[in-house]
Structure formats: C-alpha cells, structure tokens
Amino acid sequence: MSADPVPREEPSVQRASGYHEGDVDVVLSVDDVAREAEALRSEIPESTLLALARGEPFLTIQGLRAGYGNMEILHGFTMHVARGQSACLIGPNGAGKSTVLHSIYGFTRIFAGQVRVGAPEQRDITHLGPQRKLREARVAYILQDKSVFPEMTVEENLLMGGFLLRSRARAKAAAEAVFERYPRLAQRRRHAARVLSGGERRLLEISRALVMEPDVLLVDEPSIGLEPRYIDMVFEILRRLQHEEGKTIVMVEQNAKKGLEFADIGYVLVSGQTALAGTGQELLANPDVGRLFLGG
Image 1 (spheres, helix red, strand yellow):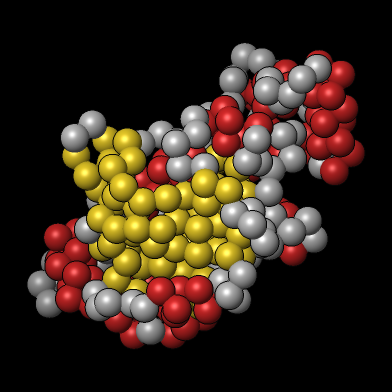
Image 2: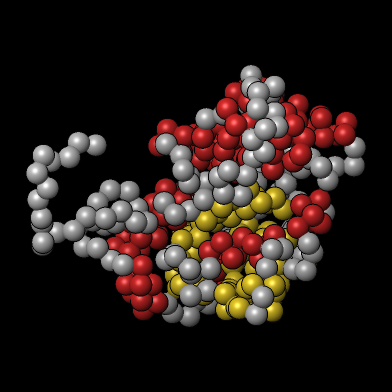
C-alpha cells in the first residue's frame, strides 16, 4: 500500500479496521462496540432458537453457565444447531465466543447447564473430557492457526489426529482417505509441516480433525492469519464438509461478514449472553449488526 509523501491530518474522518473488511468513517472503540451491542440485547424465546435449527437440533447448548476457575464467562447461554447446519458466533472482544467452543469441547468449568449431541435422541456430554467427546461423541475442535507440529511431516501430523483410534492401521487408513480427498496434501506427505503455506497448514489442521470422522466440527477463527485467496479456499472446504458430508459446524470468526455469509444461522454474543440470533442473511441485513461488526 502506498503512502502520501506528506502525512495529512483529517480531523473529521478517522479510518480503522475491526470486525469487517474495508474502512469506516466513524471509529468505535472495543468498549463502544460492547456498550452499543449490549443495548441490542433482548430476551429471545427458546422457540425462536429451535426454529433456527429447523426444530430438529443435533447439537444443543442449554442454559450454559461456564468459565475458567471461579470466573463465570457464559451466563445462561442457549444455542441449537441442526445436523448438517452451520452456525457462526460473532460479537465484541471478550463476549465469550471462544468460551462457547471451549465449553462444548470440555476446556472450561461448567457451573450449570447442559451440552447435548445426537438425533433424534440426544446424549448429555456436558462433563465428558475432550478425548471422550472426540472418540465417543464425535465432536472435533479445529484450533486457531499454528496448531500443527512443525517438525513432523504432513503424514505424521495426520496420524497424530488419529491417536485415539484403536489401531495404527485404522489411523493409517484414515490418513490415506484424507490424502485421497486432498491431493494437495498428498503431494507434501513427506514434507515437514513447517514448509507449508498458510493455507496448506490450515488445510492440514482441518484434515487432522477429520481423521476421527467427527459429526460436529468446532472451528476457531478459520480465516486468522490467512491471505484472501486462502480464506476463500478454507471456507470452500468447510462448505463442502457441511453440504456434501453433513457435518454440523459451529465457528467463531472475527471476520463477521465472511462468517455470516457462510453460516446458516448466526448468534451475536455480548457479555456471555445472546444479544441477537437469526439466519446469517438476517444478521447481515440488520443495520445494527452492520454498523457495529460489518463496517457499514
């Protein structure tokens, strides 16, 4: 990006990037966003949340109060997502978005509420540890960037993804299925993960989770640190996993516009509670969501 030879002050217009792409003419601080988002919050009937999941939830988070140590971050959070449906969580920094994913997977302290998965009968998995959630409930967590083992080969990273499988042969077969699905990784199977591009590393992180054949994918910031061309690639991979393989996807995405364009449903979190919920398109069209999170 080129700069003017002489810096100029524009006291009446400020530019900033935040939860969106592009520039805005009015800069809102994180505190401003949180305060204005708080004003949007109203009681949302559970029937409305169930309707967003087509009345047939596969993943249910019910009245969840959760946090870290003695600190409660989520205050009675409820969400429903159907099988083969995608949900995106947006909101100001510190709203509890990642804590929702952590709580589903077993990384937080649960004070009250339930996490259930399955259809038509749901299983209570609230207090299962991460290993059992992955192996028994088929819930996988795709962490933020830089979670690969850089000195291991691509193949070794995939085999690590299958460490809970009962046999090495099964893990090997699952890795081969990934290579068949993604020739880009197959070409680099003997290469150390550290030499992969940002997009290839993200593909490896997603693929490693797929080795366990999960039904639910928890995806934390899929676009973080990626160039635009790789962001599109990653979202296309997630779209195929949802629509062609029936995966249920719950994501946190700082690029709110991209996340809501992808997702069937969206939740706006503020201070550990739901402020707004609707289809992705409804939230994209909401002027308050646009002003606070989309830059328009």
